[in-house]
Length: 152
Ligand SMILES: Cc1cc2nc3c(=O)[nH]c(=O)nc-3n(C[C@H](O)[C@H](O)[C@H](O)COP(=O)(O)O)c2cc1C
Image 1 (cartoon, rainbow, N blue to C red):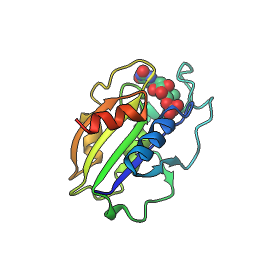
Image 2: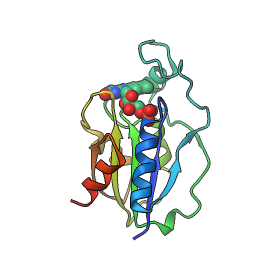
Image 3: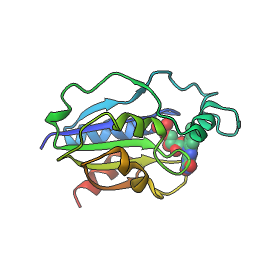
């Protein structure tokens, strides 16, 4: 089975570390979602009502990204990793996912957070993954937690 881990990480690289460790353990390929306009720390300051993250959250518009996955069709299983933003996956993640044909893919999501639970992450992500066999989402702190979860 060929596995791809797609991830987004913005603040401190927490999700990047988890994704890289999981990719190594699973012998999976890694792809980082890159917003066309990278997030600065001012952009991510959710305590400021006018910060970019808050404006985007309320606007609910897709966030453009750069780069593409050339060989997406080759993967049977896709893991999607991201930080929890406002209780679910960041808009840039669902925006990116909408560009692919998910038919026949087994998909699972993992997330890091500042304390929130996984909430309704799966339900909210599902419309961006038409045709996927979406197995669930788990809050994790390490790549090892991801691999343990998948082997259950
Ligand atoms: C815009 C924004 C919204 C966030 N919303 C939440 C939230 O609702 N619940 C939570 O526990 N953490 C929230 N966080 C914290 C991140 O989920 C947490 O720090 C995550 O581990 C960061 O991962 P990263 O370093 O890979 O970006 C938020 C962070 C940002 C920047």
